[in-house]
Image (cartoon, rainbow, N blue to C red; front, top):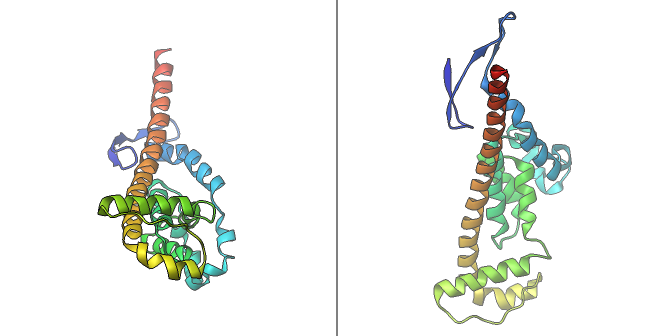
Length: 211
């Protein structure tokens, strides 16, 4: 019996074990071989119990216990990468609550989405946003201004308004490009890993038959 597998993008087939009468299929195998990507992401990103202690996420209330926010599968992880990377490139306050709200809306992995907004942190944001500003200046074909980014209210009052059109344009384009790139990278890497394991399993079975 054949069925279409979305992870492999191909048809797979049921097999029967002799004697026990128990049915096994490739879906069970795919669930097993997906353990490695899941373990990798779980090792890199915070655990659910740690997120539930963050005060900035208290607005979620009981919704933070939604199991959909902690699923670790190909689509949930890829969408979380898209969301987190997109927000990381946007020069807006409240990135963590926005990532949490987005994860709730998309039903994607909350720990990954929240962690990725820290791509832009006090050490990296001057370089990231300066690149975005230069990109916006180049697209709009306007002369650049000499600016030094700083996390202060005084800097926002005196410097943000004159530069916000090219900055926001560069940030938006960068956010779309890198979020889409990360989404596709996760989808491809996860799919490649599954396909590789599937081929190794098939080669082992063929080698046993030839003996």
